[in-house]
Length: 108
Length: 333
Image 1 (cartoon, each protein chain N blue to C red):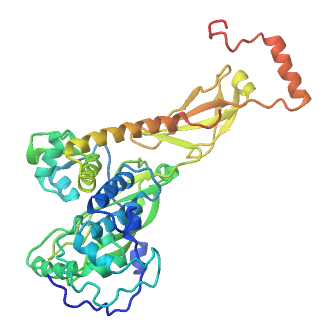
Image 2 (image 1 turned 120 degrees about the horizontal axis):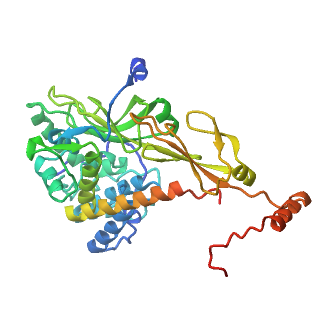
Image 3 (image 1 turned 180 degrees about the vertical axis):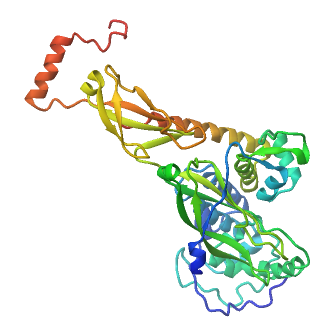
């Protein structure tokens, strides 16, 4: 490792809720063809805005949803309907766990 | 493809992996038993759904074991190593010609995650793939291709989001060598964690993914931000919650008390007649953002124990003089 490499601090771009990405960017980062993304949209896993195809824009949070759905399909053999259901249930669990954390267990 | 050279000439020894133990089946299990056991464990340890500690390590080990045991040819070759080896035994060295009668075609790889497989797997089954990779590598050089994007998680403390920070990350990334082999290489990066970052958000570092092929552009690195669990604070979106213990007289009479916040201590006025669980909002003291979040202080009334004569006398005095019925709303039982 070069010393100069160690001293360099990289500054990235924050992909927050307001930031949208294009179909091309999403395909690239999920390593899939556009048809796969179209299928994810068909099953309601992703909800793009804009006209169909190259005009589609996705919320940055789509990256995580798409990659999770594709991993579940690849590793567990579920189809996209099953992956969509799993994602919804996982989000519900996350929400409930979040409420539990906020309610807190200490102090009683 | 037939492997003609089967001499493990490099003389390395490594840890033996008991693939049957990993999948949890006997050595004489049927292919169906193996498939069932694998599927069940894959659901249990899948990193996206699992709450198990070390789920990811488990899942990788499972994938490697299944890669071998689901393929009757690879399984037979593996079985030939004998049952004498125990998991974790360090001085494993495959016998010469152990795979003489088997031609691994290299076509049986399900995932692209083989870079994560152990040295043991690589030594036994990796060669066919390397030979293939070499052939593929020749073709690659004739066209330009953008490097792959990579994804990783970065854990930060809540305070890092308030002030910004720098994190040093070491990422294991698959890399294509000039002769077409895929090797895992450690890659160290210093990354600025910007002020106001929230869990679930991603940081995109342009050009920090895989290098491009044939002069193509490098891929990007996506870092997903997650927060370490904090002993005091909990985060909900941009809002932060803190439980604040108070004495009964502080809640009843009102008080000015010091309160920690992720950005430093402040003094909080507790209004008189506050009850258990009352939420007091410190506007703008949540996570920094265009519209900063709020910090909610939740009062937790703590009772002093009646463990001295003086304390007991005070409780008795309250009982006799307050005429307080905490169960007034239970329907007069």
